Image (cartoon, rainbow, N blue to C red; front, side, top):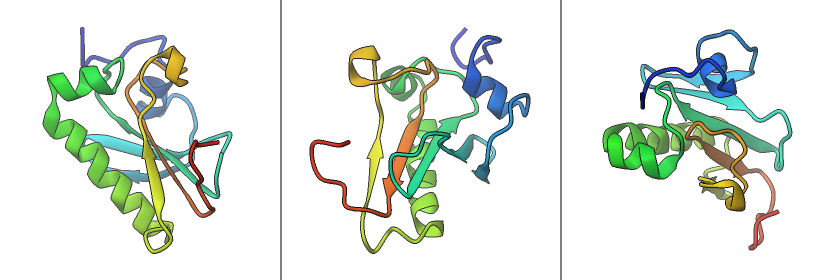
Length: 119
């Protein structure tokens, strides 16, 4: 069922504290933690505590929770002091776009030049 924790989901396990992560922020609805394979000096994932397969599914089901993720992305950027130099917020949706964990999440990237295309 959408929103319910999934036993085989890595991010659900991180949210539950069953898998360690370097958590930088936590709210009632979200958890933000450092990426284990950072692509920039600031690379933090922000995930909803509720399980949704991808960003589009999350946005359709719970627009307020989607807004919570975006607000937390801004807080992460402020705490990592990348607001002044700029940062990127990325939702990968689908395997063709690079989504590898099937739990909606966004990436906050900053702290270096982020030319387009990303990488």
